[in-house]
Length: 254
Image (tube, rainbow, N blue to C red; front, side):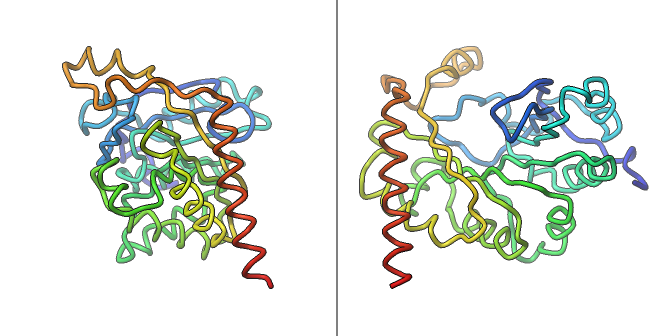
C-alpha cells in the first residue's frame, strides 16, 4: 500500500501466539493510548500516548510472517489500549493484512467513533473481518462512573458496525458490586438483542492481575479490596443476559 512505511504506530507490546482475542491462534498487537479510565483496567501502562515503541506496518507484518504457519486458522488482532486512537495506522495495517489474505480482528471499546469521521471509518470497515466490542455498562450514569466516559459514541459505533454488516462479538467484564446486578444484566441482554450483527457474547470475570502494575506506576488501585470473580459466577451471569436477550426477541416477534 502506498505510503504504508511513512506512517508509524505507537505500539505497547506484541503477543505472538494469542488464543483469546479472536478465532484461532493470533498475532496480537497492543496499541498504546486509551482515553478510558475503567476502574478495573489491568493495563494502565497502555493509557498514555507516546510511551510505546514506534512500528511501521511492514515491521509488524514481518513479525507476523515469521510464524505465518501457526496463524493458518487465525490472523491479526489489534487491541490496546484503544486502537481507534490511531485510526490511520490501524487502517493501514489492516489494509496491508487483507492484501495478504490475513483475517483481521479489532478489540475495541468504540469510544473514539464520531459520525463526522464516518468516511475514515468506512475505509477501516472495508478491511475489517470481526470486532470484539467491549461494552462496559448498560446504564449511562453508571458507565460514566466506571469508565469516565459516556457510552454514546460506543453505541453509535456498534450501530455503524451493524450498518456495515461487520460481525460483532460483545465482551463484558463482570465486576462484583458494579456490573453483576440483575437489572443491569437484563438491560444489557435487551440492548444486545437490537443488533443483527451480533455473533457472540463473552462474559469475562473480573481479576486482580493488574494490581502489581498500579503499584509499579505509583497509582492507587481503584478497586482495592474487590476480590476476583469465580468463573462459575461468570457463567451464571451470562445465562441471565442471554435469557433477557431471548425474552426480548420472542416478545418482539409475537
